[in-house]
Amino acid sequence: MDLKLELQKKADLVENALEKYLPKGNDPQSLIFESMKYSTLSGGKRLRPILMMAACEFVGGNVEEVMPFACAIEMIHTYSLIHDDLPAMDDDDYRRGKPTNHKVYGEGLAILAGDGLLNYAFELMIQATLKNDKNLEKKVLAMKEISTASGIHGMIGGQVVDLLSENKKIDGTTLDFIHNNKTAALIIAPIRAGAILGGANEEELEALTTFAKSIGLGFQIRDDILDIIGDEKKLGKKVGSDIENQKSTYPSIYGLDASKEKVNELFHKSVQVIKHFGDKSEFFIQLSDYLVRREY
Amino acid sequence: MDLKLELQKKADLVENALEKYLPKGNDPQSLIFESMKYSTLSGGKRLRPILMMAACEFVGGNVEEVMPFACAIEMIHTYSLIHDDLPAMDDDDYRRGKPTNHKVYGEGLAILAGDGLLNYAFELMIQATLKNDKNLEKKVLAMKEISTASGIHGMIGGQVVDLLSENKKIDGTTLDFIHNNKTAALIIAPIRAGAILGGANEEELEALTTFAKSIGLGFQIRDDILDIIGDEKKLGKKVGSDIENQKSTYPSIYGLDASKEKVNELFHKSVQVIKHFGDKSEFFIQLSDYLVRREY
Image (tube, rainbow over all chains, first blue to last red):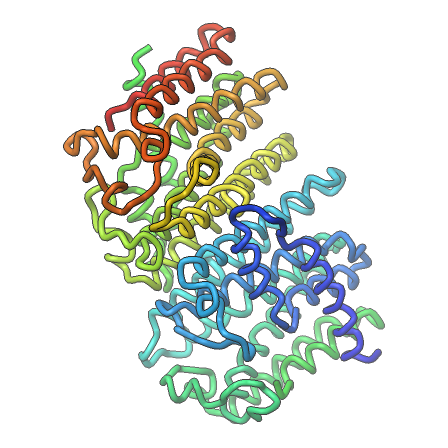
């Protein structure tokens, strides 16, 4: 299996589905449709929807059925970036080389576009849930995974502690909390939701959950590492910003070598729990390798 | 029936349920719990949850079952106020006589508290949906009503057009769009959701929807009127702010007399569609009278 090709194939499916699902029309409020589209279709890796699709396929489910949920999680991810970039939060002018949402549409509309995307993600999932009442409960369970992970006991909770930790020295426990909630929660949720939608049995769900926790944390620590040793050209963004902003990271607390060691350990753990599922685990094993060793 | 007593009884139930459902605990992110609670428990009229409870009772449903949904819509209403008060939006320092959320917790946390409340509203409804799988579809249908009304084709859509209309003369069509989406949508949705959860038949649902549309618009026009003729002491806020901010309102476009006439007409229409249901329509008839003729 060629991982890059497989990722591209899945990302293309996500791209098409997002274009299909994003609101359009010539209504009086259509500027917010444009603003939502601007940030959603600005070239992300589509990692979270891809994980959901892959988890669904892993357990033998039909990937068509997860697409609204996969798009919903990408919209939730996008809204969190729009709000994160606001002057009252990280105050970023650029993201992925393009002006941030509030730089283009103004702060007021950027706040509303974020709210709109979060709300619309639920609209999309609810509509998909009602489309075919055969799998009603599974779909509501998938929504539960996603809504818990994106809320105050997940991503938002992590952002709160991140915000409160600005310009402060924090300890390893606090950093773990931020990493696990701000980043890992939205890596774990699409995998669990995809597995549930695909009809996973308990053994599969448990293995995929452990796998997801490992790559979720590994992905974030790798991010911290890349901010030190990364190549600006490959990354497409400045390195050294964590040190510049005196931000506590895994390497700043535990050191660079221990961080690399930890990522390695998480990679091995992630492989360990899924390799006995045979051929179908190949995609996830290659993906884990890519995520925790990536150069960008 | 004593309307004031009945409203108070229902508001007390909502208050207790909100306290029960709001997140608590000594977690690292607990400051956001405090911030969410600060704005949610700051003495609103609880109109939207009361409407939902009343609609459920109107069709003979069990009001206990709607409480998580009733609290969810109040949390959505609260989040919209928090974001609306932000400097990038209406820039208000006070609401109901208390400093606004961002004045107490800072802008960053206020944005996150709003996001948190919106997300948490869905968490609450999803949990309630899964609690008892007998009425799964009804509950998802209720979520659909609420999510559509609070999104870009409802409340957020209205706020966008309101924001874009600042300091501009707008026409009646645009004002209707703002009123119908920014305010009426979140009056209609709790009534329809409460009716659906309570097991309404088609005739009941249709009558309640027409009723809801009438009082939703009437409520907002009355708001515009009170900003001109209201008593500051009774209202607990300054009057004349619409004129001061050169905001287009129903009276500024159609005149004060025509506005009063319109409210009257909407009141009669609201009564017309539900009075033939007999005794059980008394609460809604009295409530409509109160809402469109209120002094505060």
